[in-house]
Structures are given as structure tokens and as C-alpha cells.
Amino acid sequence: MKKLGLGSVLLAMLRREVSLALRQKGEVLTPLVFFVVIASLFPLGVGPESALLLRMAPGVLWVSALLAAMLSLQRLFATDYADGSLEQMALSSTPLGLLVLAKALSHFLLSGLPLVLMAPVLGLQFGLDGRALGILMLTLLLGTPTLSLIGSIGAALTLGVRGAGVLLSLLILPLYIPVLIFGAGAVEADAAGLGMGGHLSLLAALLVLSIFFAPLATTTALRISLE
Amino acid sequence: MAGANGVGKTSLLRMVCGLAPIESGEIFWNGTPIHAQADAYRQDLCYLGHLNALQESMTVYENLAFTAALSGMAPDAAQTKAVLAQFGVAGRDRQLVRHLSQGQKRRVALSRLALSQARLWVLDEPFVAMDEAGVRMLADLIAAHLTQGGLAVLTSHQQVDIGAIPAQLLELRA
Image 1 (cartoon, rainbow over the protein chains, first blue to last red):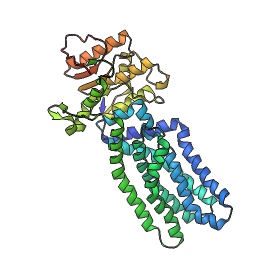
Image 2 (image 1 turned 120 degrees about the vertical axis):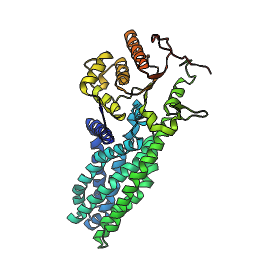
Image 3 (image 1 turned 90 degrees about the horizontal axis):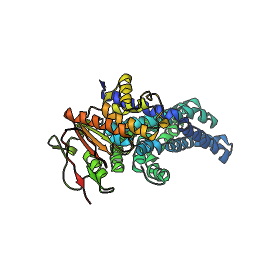
Image 4 (image 1 turned 60 degrees about the vertical axis):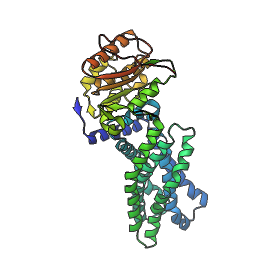
């Protein structure tokens, strides 16, 4: 039997999450299809006026991405909780916070990254130009990992609670507001010639903050749920 | 550890693992309270509760490799095969857990003990859902663990003979 380093343990965790999700393809596809449908509903609802759509595009795409990323959050810990794997993780000699970080990273890879890649296609529908599409992708790339990390706190807090899905949304949507403001704001600020540096820096700062604090909060919530 | 249903055997085991909070008193491991050395204590601990901790849509081998990885070990395929054969579920390593029977799942969960390097085993009703041969094999495994200087804390409703090794019976009463 070989001994594993910390990096290999986290890699094993990540590989498990990704292969589990790929075996249930619905889990990866549902948020993506949801994102496409929601973003496509807006032009149908507000009419085909291109100036209005162009003005709305960053906000609409960001809100849709945010809701889509939230769809799969509830399952982040639920199956592991139900079958006892979460207990084993909590009793592992690997710090639980790092395992949580690996889980959040897998959530980003499976439900955040597909949104980032799909966003330019939807942006084209709204008539965004190449530069705006690039900025949109960049903000989503910086923002969606933060959504996964903050979401993991909510997923841990609502573990084993009835009606967890609704409660989860109520808990974490307010926490998503800063990410939404700076994410959608960057595209508009650039279009207005104000520069997007500030917005991107703040998004990156939110990401760094949540990488540090979210696993701590999630770990505490998980240990309470397991009592 | 013995006692009637609902008397608190599982709760006590979860406290021993550090999963449940302790209202009063202290649990020591190697002379130090367990909460003061959580990471070192978890390295010495292997817990098997009522839940099997097996993901239904992963294979038996993937499940065992993952829980071993959690404690920093990487068992090779041959070793896992041998352990599964010892537990009477030979040749199932590439099968999805979902396709196993309840008893087989329990056997796979228990086979973690043979792959674990932990000194302290905490087992909640390990003999439940096991046939006679399974009980015998598990009792021998625990006996072997004890003779190698290991410790085991377990709950059971049946008396199981583990040979001439000294054991303490704690009878919980409400």
C-alpha cells in the first residue's frame, strides 16, 4: 500500500466528484440548458428592440448564470450525507476544509465552467460585440468559482432540512449580490469608457476572500449537520 | 458495548469518534484530549457506522480506493481483490455498488477494516446483516487486530467469541 500526499488526496476527491457527475449527465446538462432557456426568454418577453437588448444583456446573462449555478448546489453534499460518505470525510485525517475546497472546485468545473463557455453564444443573440463578449467571459470566469464557494456554505447549512432547495436560495442569493453587481457592471463600465479594471479587481478580491473563508464556514456547518 | 435499543450506544460511539459533542467529561487518546489533537487522532481512527458510506454509482474498487485515499493511502488493485475475496465478495471489484445485495454491501463496507492502518476501530453493530460465516470471519479479523496491539470499540446484540483476548463489556442502562 502506497502513502498519498495531500495533493493526491485532493486530486482523488476531485476525480471522484467529476466522474460521479459525468455518470449522471443530467447533472451537468441541466444547469446549462436552464441557462440557455432563461437567457433566451428575455428577448421574447421584452421585444426585439436591439438597443434595449444590448443594454440589458450583461445583467440578464449574469442573473441567468447565477440561477443556473445554484440549481445543482443542493446535491453538493446531499448524497454523501445520505450514504455516510460525509461522515468518512469528516473523520478523514485530511482537513475537511481542503476536501470542501476540492468539492467547490468540482462544482465550478461542472456547472460554472460550462456557463462561461456558453455565455458568448448567448451574448451574440443579444448583439454584444467581440470585446464585450470577452469581458463577459472573463467576469464569469472570475465570478462563478465564488458562486460555487459561497453556495457550498448554503448547501452545508441546509443539509438534511426539508424543503432545502428553497431555503438554500433564500440564504445565498443575498450573498451573491456583490458578485452580480461587479460582474454585470464590468461590461457596462467598459462600454461607457470607464474601464473595467476596478470591477475585475473586486471580483478577484471576492474570489480570494471566499477561497479563504467559505471552506471554514462550510466545515463548521457540516460538522453541525453531522452531530 | 451492549444495551437496549435507544439507550445511546450509537451516540456514545459518535462521541468517541468526535462526531457528536460531549455534554460533560472528556475523551482521551494517548493521554491527550481528542479535540486537542483532532488530526492526529483521526489518523488512528477507523469508524464504521450504520451507513455503509458507499456511492451507488461507483464501482466497489473506486469506493474502497476513495475511502482509503481519505486516510492518505492508495491500495493497489491486487490488494483490494484479495481483501474482497477474504470478505466473500470476490470478483465484484469492477461492479457498481448499486448491483450488490444488502449483505454484500455490508461486507464491502467492512472490508475497509482490512485495508485500514488505523489502530482504533470504532464499529457500530458490525455483525448485523452478516451470515454465520461472515460473523466468524469478522470476529477473527477483530481478534487479529487486537493481537497486533490494536483497539476495537464495538456494539453488538450478540455475544461473539474472539478467543482468549481480554475484552471489556460495557452495559449501558437508561
